[in-house]
Length: 291
Image (cartoon, rainbow, N blue to C red):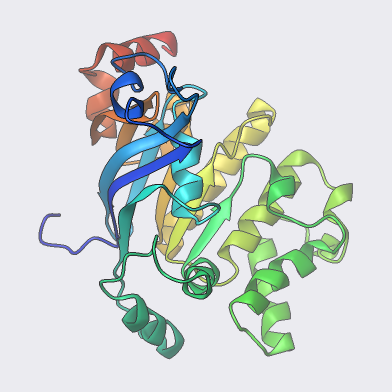
């Protein structure tokens, strides 16, 4: 794998919520067992996180509530500005539109580029599936309209092509085609999540972010959604970053994973290795608690 160029390279990503002070670094993190600075009350969302993600790879990020995993994911998706760090994107494409965009961002730290470029990266290259489907879909338009919305943001212009793609993704996510023009507010939670998956895939992303996508769903629905995601990833071969507190989800979907605690990565390696022989005491506790 070392001979393959990473799709995504992240270095020293740090996000703090608050003014910050000279004590933040030494008084927060796993060794202090807290992510709030007692001096200035700043919250360490995530601190000095570095990793590479390769083409077609699925990386998991696991940790308990408050560990910083969702903050990390949303920082990668440009949902807010980071405090410091670097992120570089590298991708080869035969699509002329994508080729122009990739040239534009080559060797550019995406965290410090313009909001226009960030929107282009989000609309053309990535997709996100939130824990709460209502964060990713609009209840005021139809299910098909939600899927079309992402394609329009990625500058798809032919209405018939958009309609055909929406139908195709509806079928791929095992949704009844006759409901494509209905509002998602009339759907179950599992069906809303499938609409969100279709929307995330609409513009043919090369990278998909998943944030606790099965939390709150019935167990039988969870299994169906996870199988769907795994099968679609294998078919379309995009990369994924999967956030979860559940090692069962991480085991099913990912090849490598990072374990986070109090905003920092404390363990990183192959998923099977971490699950079978965790090194850090916190990881050992997490794994044993879910056996």
